[in-house]
Each structure stands twice: as structure tokens, then as C-alpha cells.
Amino acid sequence: SAVISQKPSRDICQRGTSLTIQCQVDSQVTMMFWYRQQPGQSLTLIATANQGSEATYESGFVIDKFPISRPNLTFSTLTVSNMSPEDSSIYLCSVEGGPTGFTEAFFGQGTRLTVV
Amino acid sequence: GENVEQHPSTLSVQEGDSAVIKCTYSDSASNYFPWYKQELGKRPQLIIDIRSNVGEKKDQRIAVTLNKTAKHFSLHITETQPEDSAVYFCAASRKNSGGSNYKLTFGKGTLLTVNP
Image 1: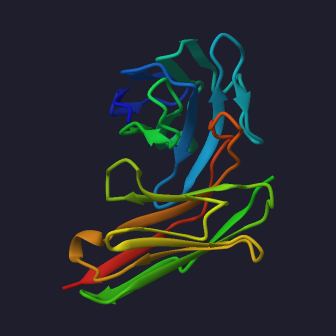
Image 2: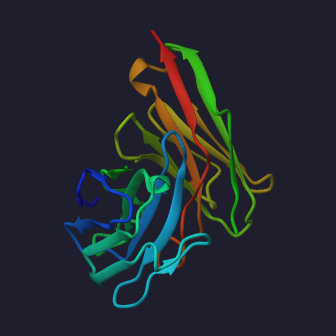
């Protein structure tokens, strides 16, 4: 398995500002993903964080709004830019694949974002 | 792209009864079907998964069945307990030959309540 540390766990932000969420894994992983989960809803994939190259975004999500970095195989960040109340949600990182051979996806504890 | 439908959206059972949650998927290339349990305020956690070369998999009180022809899979929980109360998500994806996921597509979730 993988131990994932996601920070911050929650934040309250002013509209128009940006927040960067960090995801740190205790081992090298092949894949890292970022999801959004609105209250009472399912998980929606924002993008796949690619190590050393630009992230792959899903339909409806753009790099200017959700810039992602993945400088190495254990760390990624998601920035929520120019926030509005509609961005209030839980953001989760997910990882899978690694030298230990696990192939299931594990999730961080999530970042609960409230935009006021 | 893949589309996963999940039913029912809510399910209430008496302790000791069985619970069944059903999902259908659209992409015949999908070959990996995990189930996640999410307790309130917690991260999703994998409880069982099945690959397309297997028709059924069991782990104690939990079982998953897969019908590739009909493109549906189901989660079965026997002898339910109050601690089984949570939201359950099914998902589907393709795994490449190296075992890495393509992206997971989630169902909308089922809120299971087990009444004592």
C-alpha cells in the first residue's frame, strides 16, 4: 500500500485568491491523479499528473484554472486559481502503481475547500 | 468515454440482512472494477476489486460478481453490521499490461444504512 499525506486538510479562502494543495507519497508511484468531490456527490477526475510533463486534463477542467505540478515520483501539487464559491469542494489526490507492485488506487485524506 | 451507472442511490437494511449494489459500465474495454467505501468525512478506501478474467471474488462478508457480456457488476455484503453504513462507489477502468490504471470512472455512489 501507499501512505499519502495531503495538505492542507481544510481551508477557507477568499474569492479571487488561489490555493495550492500538496500530495506527498511515502514511496515512488507510477500514477497520480487529482479528483474533486462536491458535497454528497461522486468523485470527478480533474487531471492525471504526469511526472516531468504537463498534466492531462479531463473535459471541463483547464490548466489555467487548475495548474498541476509533479516534479518527481512522490510529490504533486494542485492549485485552484482565481477561486469562486463554486470551487468549494473536497479535492483528493490518488496514487497507484509502484515498485512494491500494488496496482489499486489509494486516496489521500482530502482537502476540504470553502470559498467565501 | 466510460460511463458507470450505479443503483440504488440509497439502501436501508436491517442488521444481519444482505445488501446488493449494482453497477453497469459502457466501455467493453474496461477490465478492472474496484469498489470503494467512504465513511462520512473520510477518504474512499478500496474494499474489493475484480478483473475481467474472473467472474466472482469473495473476501469474508463481501463479494463482487462480474458479467462481462451484460457489462454489469455487483457488490454483495452479507450479514450486514452497523459499521457497514457508508457510501459505496463502484468504478471501472482499463489496466494496461504493466498493471497501471487508465483513469477510474466512478458511479454516483450508494448510501447504505444498516439499522441495528
